[in-house]
Length: 414
Ligand code: GKR
Ligand code: MG
Image (tube, rainbow, N blue to C red; front, side, top):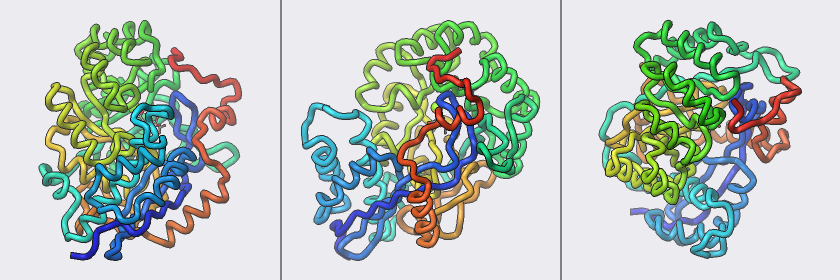
């Protein structure tokens, strides 16, 4: 078998077009940032990964790169040790940002699985324990949005700020991709208006499982007041308010399961969550949980403790989507359809263009590893975007004030 020791880690920051989608933190900027990771082995195989494009992650990856040559692609313990060394000087106790280490590991780990798969002729879902479902179901991820970015022409989707516009957006999602479940990103308009939007969706799509995600934008009191309107309407309530304690007060008052991608995002958050019965569904994300193996371990914890499990997403391209699909295909206890921002993205970095949903589902891409290859022309173009855009962090608040100058951030806000 070809040599599977790492020869080189290459990281390319990219920026791709993102529509003016709204959330509790503001409005998406015209470009979303990402990093494309390539791990080349001594045997000449290239494994791919995709992760955040923030300064902190790029700096962490730059510090890790010189430590990796010689490491076996199967040595994930070695990867964690080197990443710990790169990010926080090897200390066990955490001095820096809790979230950085698993992000740096997660970015590279996917590329190691891909390299191993491409070397051995195995798919990543097989290496992760075996495929348990032929197709992975995804949800329609609805956003309120402006018609276009500040100073730019309206995009194809147009403005979405009313229940009628929301139903049109959902209809288009269903027609284009066939999703069953519908998620509404909330925490932007007064909650009663957002729930009116949910009711309009229910009327238009009587069978669709619905979810709403205010990203911690509602107070405990507001959420408690709204619960009677949400009961029987949604399959889960995602991060309605701030923190484990606040959400535990909400969970104690309702049978609607609470879900999170905000407050249980690290193993150290699990004991408090279990003790307080705050969230009954974990929205996992291999990008911040430490990669695919760590996400499989999280799935096992969810199974043991009787928690529901699904998948969170940020604006992303096809390498991430392929990795999410392999992971979900190899996770027996995936209890809800996964989130993805993919339908909002018009750029792509994999050869052959975007992976296509059929009936709201994705099949695991054919071929060894992740089953995707890098479109180098697209990579060069998106890297040039990154250099030209001149942004290194996401800043939804500043973008929002270009549209609504008096807008103020609040979490909770309503
Ligand atoms: O893309 O605006 C967005 C979302 O709000 C994203 O930032 C969240 O991380 O999708 C995510 C969520 O479910 O909270
Ligand atoms: Mg969320």
